[in-house]
Length: 347
Image (cartoon, rainbow, N blue to C red; front, side, top):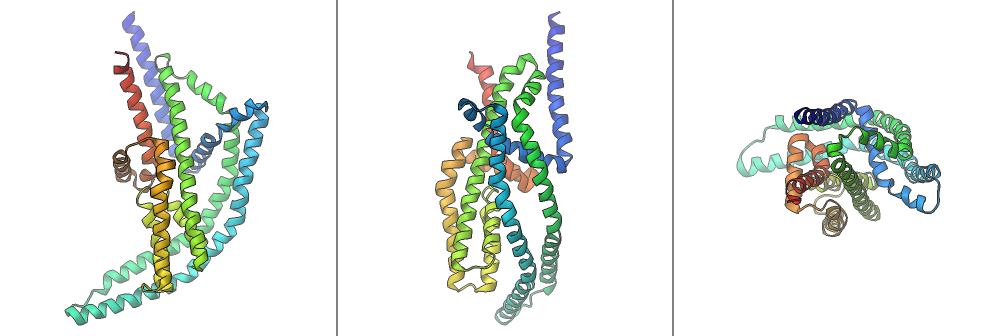
């Protein structure tokens, strides 16, 4: 009888985890659904803690959800609607500007080729250079051509994400109760604790990274604007988005600014030096103050663990793995700590 009871418990636990795996695979296989769903869920994790605060003030739950939803919509939609035309215009200008970059690179390569021939008597092969130029030019053109498609996807997300977020805010508690009913009694307490802690960790981390990226992007934008550098707004957005990628992000964000500085002003110009100093200052502020205060405290991971998790994430999932590696490492730490407590904590 006892063996049969243990067998039933094992089947319930197996079914529960199988259901989780199937749900993840199903959602992951539909990017048009999974991307807005994940964004809506992350926004839900960030703003959901404000609902209990409004309830304490005597605001009815549905009214609290409407207040939060409308506030978030105003904060996010107005800047997006205002900035999309600016972004589109600067991206189009970049497309016009690309031939100038290509001409500059070719000229500099020919100068280097001549110097090497005069100094070392070696003629550099043009084939690899031409192939590299063609490859970069083709990919940049593809990016520019796909801008309308990207903007269409963003428009779709602007409709779908608020819709999903509203129901997450309104019915999130009910969804959680339905899911928890599927959890076997044997692991209910641990699952409930871990789900709350994981949600809090992920929400805090995403919010901290958003603030960090916004600070870096604003510093770059304002600094370039004051220096009169072209595409200041677009470069600020690139710096903000690439900053999301741990360690590699600042270098990726700097690369287009270096190319622009070289083409427009030259390597010995004060403007080029100013661009390098601005990016260095922004990243010093980020790594020295913003990251330790905001991000590190949120995930509570040793720097060595952070580095290892980023390397592992990049190895298996590339750039996406680098972005999600730190919250996944924090989640893994929580799970391991809970398992350790269950095995040794009561002894």
